[in-house]
Image (cartoon, rainbow, N blue to C red):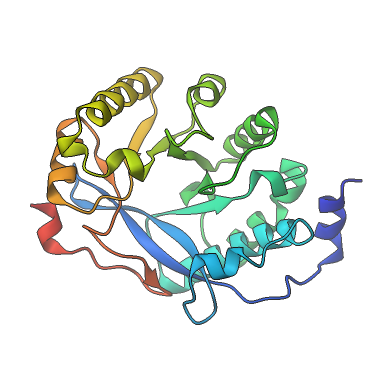
Length: 248
């Protein structure tokens, strides 16, 4: 039996506390919040880096499982009605059907519908086994979860992955978004991504938007889903409030 499956049975504790901040994802077409991304923090709002620096090969599975449960618990307590996006560590998932059990249990315990959960590959996670990741995504889709590829264009999750599996959403890496209104190469790349995803029936989300000029270019390029400081910074253990001026 894989180690992760045994850990799932053992009920081990992570050994350090985590909490979450929630950052809204907006839909420019409906001018409403589409989803909230759960971003890991320390128990007193410490940075994600301070938490992730404590993750090792030995506790990676427990950390991944704890994040899922805590993100769902926090979202339920805040009364989130929109979709909830949870990052996961593909290298911590041994068998999708076994490793998803705690997610189902948390969703049932906190009465958070699984059809409102999006699973996305966590930022910066180097996928060691792409067929394994594709299998995870397909299993999660079969279970009723939505899926997303994060940091698209950053090198780890590129066209080869998209050719094998088409998620519900791809999130364009913020490095492509930054100053896109003045960068013709970035504009050409993003137009290409939008065209590919339109043909594959995949929604595109632009993250890391900080200026109205970036927002306007991306909206004109056909991207409705957006996330970034222009709209709202992550809110620690709270629901973020969209800046009204960000819509106009």
